[in-house]
Image (cartoon, rainbow, N blue to C red; front, side):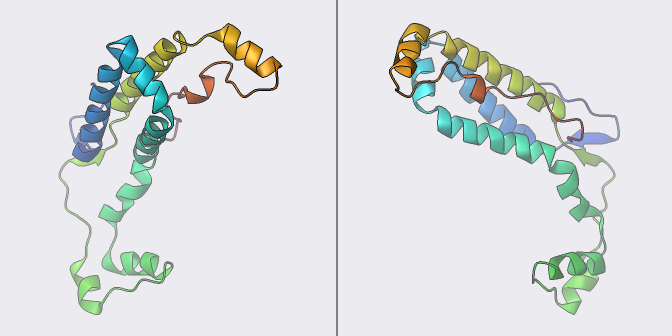
Amino acid sequence: MQTNVHANERPSRFLKQRIGAFSEVLTFFASEPKRQVAFLLQIEFWDWEMEGLIFAVESFTARSVAWHMSGRSANDLLATRGLFLTSRSRKRYSSAVQTVKVVAPTGDLTDLVSQWNHLVDRCENLLDPEESHRTRESGGRALENLARYRKQPLHPYAG
């Protein structure tokens, strides 16, 4: 997996590990048609997992603000949620000293989205479009394709 970061930045280790582990899962399912059928049987779960990863990367910048605020600002923000720090905690909490800025691994996620879409394409080739069409025409429930599971590239505000 690639990561597009500058010299004074490093990608989030947590997100890189999650993306790497998920990539291994997709590689496993993509390797054989019988595994692709198993993936299709579990697609709602894996789709939910993929959406969670996309959200984690896209929301990283907003969440990283927590590492750059004062104790008073942290207390004020927590107070909007009904949570209040002790005076001692407020005084002890200060911006984290980071010599290297931690960023979202957007390049890795872009690669993962491509890998996901490739697996969805392979699974779609296992489906019988004629049977799906007949089922829909007779009033049954059948997807025309797997388009609803394909993922779009990252949003411009991501990471």
